[in-house]
Length: 483
Image 1: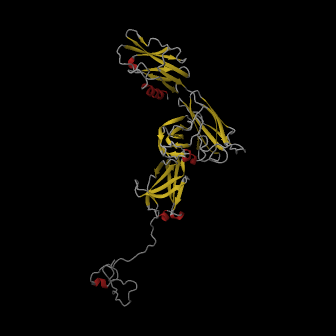
Image 2: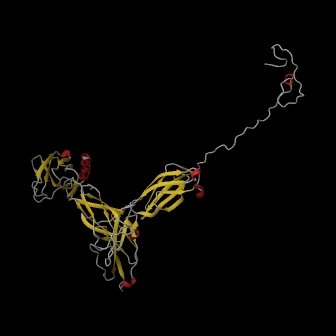
Image 3: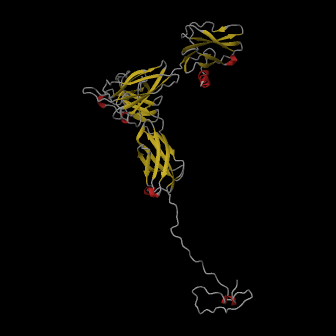
């Protein structure tokens, strides 16, 4: 893996070579987290023939003092560096010309050319069930041990098995989270974490018992990022650009009317941001978000004299949650079985389909006379049960056709897969019901000859037919008989 990281790190840093060595010399300080102690630092010196060598200096005390660690000719274009320990390393690059003049001559007060965090350790997850304090029936508490923590990912499902549901947590190294599961009974929670060096922790799981709220406790509001109770609590769209439709409360409008509608957005677990788009009093408003995922929105009308509700603050819940989902479901047709007539003549289609936000009845089946279509509806709005059974004769399917299975998610994304072979539902094998013999047509005979008059009669011929007279013949047989 070391050479791969060398190459990858080189690609990262080549375009952001240390400041002062690039021709323009104005690049900002770049910071990188790497999973190895052995890596390369590329550089691009200015086109100056007087430069004789390039020197690399490193600081392990965040820029207070620097020590030289490598010297290379300008045509080498990179330094090889090996860190002794994990931690932060600040680098400054210096040039030495033919006259022995070093630039820069003094590092005091200079920002580093590059900052690199060496992190070779995986994050460690501590996860346990927690006592809900806000009326939610389930809660967890976690802490991630890693100085360079980046993100966490969690899902839950019933302890009896079944589909995993996403658990939307704030992206913090420590926290407590309560929510209302969409399944009843105890749930299993699975958590994963990653640091900025792309190390992934060993996944952790915990069993959480759902607790019924005590009288007087206020339940958690539905639709918040901590409690997406059901798919209806969140709207799903399949593009980062979409419209927000709204209607003003006429009873709250004054004589000055409404001048505009200010739109605020927040990435789930992040801070509020003011949208560059502004809505009109009539709506709708078109907005764009930067990434896929769950976003919250708050709309604030502003009157004609500039009066409006206060801007949202950290901790304020949005008016609406929207899940931006650009990924189609994964679909695979695993088998197609056509039973013999003795078994009922059934057609059974098997498939697998998966998606984080799969629709409640996501599956549709289609058939066609050609592999490329056009396709005709066979069955639609089926549950993701993994199989479908039918009688081709009752559905009047052709004796040979091609089959396709599609699945849709809550945002309307569609995934599909086609069965690799033509489906043949005519399994009848032709067989002979009766066999008999039939005489061929009577052949035309030649005129009667004297010899034919003396042939031996066939069984059933009249006894009155004249037989040959017995006698001796040259071959010793009775007269008239031939061997």
